Image 1: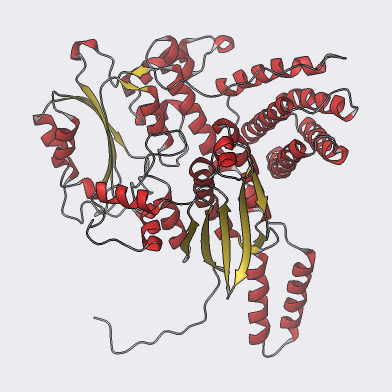
Image 2: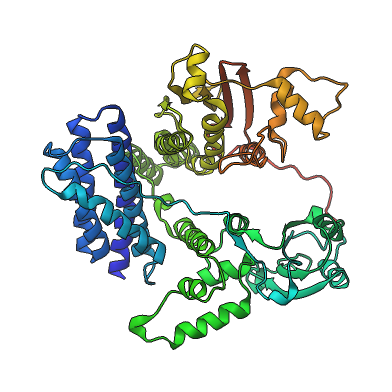
Length: 577
């Protein structure tokens, strides 16, 4: 029990050190000779290595020692800071975070993808440890090829007619007068159901089950000559009450990887993820598990490796499932959100008020003050959240061949911790749009009379009792005419009733709306901005857009200062029947 407590403390402290390392590495890009920044990097790595050694995390110690040795050579001016070295160190920092997270939250064998990544990084670091040698690092790639074909069902007797259908019914589908099983029964009359897996991962404890609610989902392999539209028509009457995905025969690995990424946030094993995404059947998983149990303890292979070796599933899909498992583990096990660093003066004030309350006869005023101080303890500076996006802008701009600087202002502005946690996803969507759609490529900016390097600004400030978060870029702005034409094309607006530009801009928040000509890993699917609007509204906030064509776009997120207690009273009239 004491070791588990030490691991939790180590995990929290390491998360803070990782943030320091990332910020320092990104700062080195603009000032490669800053010795203070290099010393921060070295001290962070040294502290992580020492603390990991105290609690017996040997893998963390071994890998971090390699990183520390490279940083020591950098500190002693035996190496020169380069873009390649910074990129490699960022990947090493990510790998250290994965090692620490897994080692502190799981007793299972280290996943294959983490082992392989560690080996690649060891090889990439090795040249930097050779005295008198300054290498040009080879890129350590982590991207997966996603254009390989994956059959939704591997029995060749069914030819190319086997579809995969993923169904997640909403809780209220029965109350809406729909019977989920009737759609499946009709499906049987239109083709052959090869297998059907019932999902019950959303089923609550028996004491919390509502008999009028639906908690089940289904993964179905369906063999039919029907087209995708004809299959969609089968679910016409329930589509508003369910989430349905229909994957055609011989779909690419990217399709299954996307389905895995969209899964709900439950902590599953690799096999469960693959079954529930339809990449493999339960029978195939059972066969692989029996094979794994029959292997000698010293030669056991992971379940993913067995499935790949048997030709049941593509390696890329297994790696996506491993990545999903890692993300779920971080979300469910990390203690980062359970701890708050509180200024000592606030704690002292709270203790003093409690002391006064003990001796006070009329304590209502003191109770109100205690409540206010307790609420202020939930307030955290938004700087930590803003700083996370430095890495996002750095990596994404490099991928797109753009030069972009992220400027952060108002980091000292405080916001309720609950709101800060919910802001990450909306801000991520907006900043990605700034990088992908807003900021132009360097040559296009030069032709337009702008500096080759674009700027994205993140700012936070108080305004009339609320918090405003402003995200702006000096890119190409929003094209109202292009947005209008796309909205007309998809039937979203009446072409004869032209809207003002400010109202046209709001159309980008409509579900499924996108002006992108092609789908990329960053955009083009019409998801994102509607999620931003919905998430902000759940926090009792709203979003505004201001754009100057060819010059800039600014998004303003208005939020209440805190999710505080609002004084009020309840009035009852008459009797309840």
